[in-house]
Image: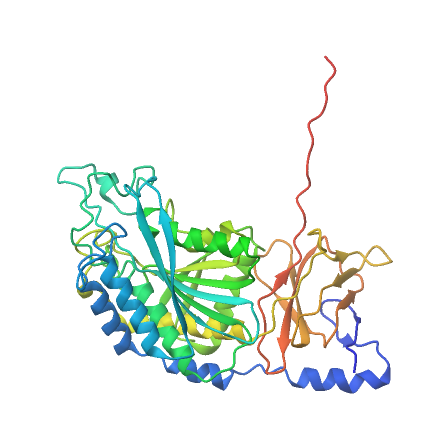
Length: 468
């Protein structure tokens, strides 16, 4: 039976009326009944499968390599980045035959913080889904010890300060101790644990899950940038990148303890796909990990700093980064980033938030497309000139859609309405100047996609020619 193609809504606060022939009415009702507001039991089970003990064991092994600097030893079986990446690869292989494990290799010339020619190796584990669209869970496994000598200026020794000062200088000892238990053994452990959890779940995901541990992050996000650029050139479809960088300690350097919240940074503007993904995580976490507070941060990352999600945003893929609530900068990029600074109960909670969010995206249909081929929003004023006329492209597997709207000055959705299996919506006497609109696709199991927002295009201005 063909989908209903248009809905008429009488104002943002009044009831919905479906203008359809009688033969389609029962279809709309059955689809609406498929939308469950409750948690998906499959995702609940997956979230519960996250093991704090496994996270701790993985982080312990990673820190035990002494250093995982991108420019450290590659031949040793016990120390350096070569030993670390081989161990990660073997662990991915051991987890499940469902995981397709590979090295993502890039030969680098000397450049910037890469002080000599080196082979950079990301470790990738792919869990194939029913579609080619990808959901990434990532963390960087490389480390660095950039401890300045005694007496150096304090602003240049703080890990969060002086971004103009090169992090890795030519004189640095790349084989010095850099255990990186938290930066980013925490994100690497989380990524590896979720690869196991997803592979063992038995869930048939629509999207393909990709778990990557990056190298070269400490030299300028090089490993992730090489991967994301190649992905863009291959016209890959990425639904989300959940990047995790320093997510394993609840005790900040200021003495404040916060093991009940995590920060998510996302690149603007406010209706960018990155911000939409961040809001999505906040909603999903409220269902599956309600004890953990999601703090949304309206910038791409901490002030003057960055991480591998930026390689995805630079290539126009939706991406966010998780950061612990309260950092200890003195431990970062130093030999003091050890296991005793970790809180594995807290790391497990952050892993559960990632698991619930990634599973929800991977089970839901793809987010609807709300633009023309040329990128213009498919939003108009209707034939009257005073209505909101919304259109979107159908999403594969969707049985219904949810339309969201909010007042134009607010930055999060205020109201929503399920509108059935339709591709158009008319809202009489609702001005598109006063409201922001978005659409999400809903699958037969009730899982909902990330919201696609209608973004007002920026007016291009031209110079005024002045007669002299």
